[in-house]
Length: 260
Ligand code: ATP
Ligand code: MG
Image (cartoon, rainbow, N blue to C red; front, side, top):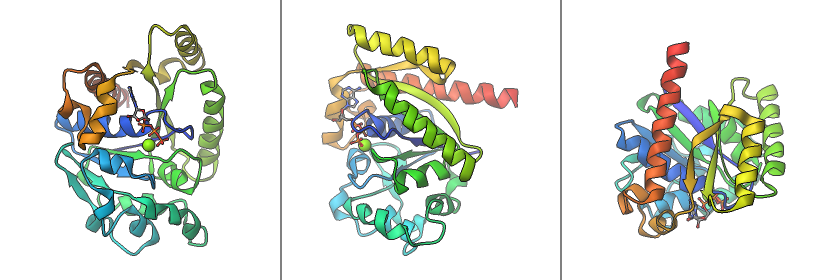
């Protein structure tokens, strides 16, 4: 059965897109069928997959507004080995235009139904806001993956996100789980990062992934070549960390399936 994960954190620049693209490529490298949905008007995930956001006729925007079918919009990321529903700046308009439409929070969920059975994993790259686009991601998902930097204000931002997840659970998507918290851009020599990491484990226990994504220049360079890091420099510490994360996620879901 497909697992749909929303990669979300309302804080900007914490590694959501880097995680979405590299985890999608790493899961695909294990032979899983993967779809990545770009829900951010910045279109960074689209560009990072090697697809030029400026040349797209149709994107997730038309799907959300009901003027294109999701299958028509879908592209193949040759460099990533997975499928992509792209986005570009047009999507910024959807925020306003969706407000008056029926089922405005569940439009992505409805759209995915047509294609979701073709995949093992669907990853949704959310924008840095708790807005209607993110809500669509949270309503469509089975679980949330939260990338975060271990900084002083990180825990504070996390409590806003957790309360949003609780509200979504109460009103729109009762089955929504927190899949895991991912420590990104981690610098083990930084004492504060170690302290925040320890606090995170105290609060969230085994919801914190064992895999830590280090700060690694290859992860920052790869998007400018339109490829995931495992294609750009497979042996880099960053690429290896995302491959390890894919392994950890697959192990966790195997354990959950066995326990069910
Ligand atoms: P936004 O909130 O704007 O969507 P984001 O949460 O998606 O941002 P990214 O775009 O993935 O964050 O990362 C922000 C910046 O940090 C990018 O320039 C990216 O290349 C870089 N970056 C992400 N992860 C790492 C890492 N582990 N090591 C080094 N650089 C990284
Ligand atoms: Mg992003």
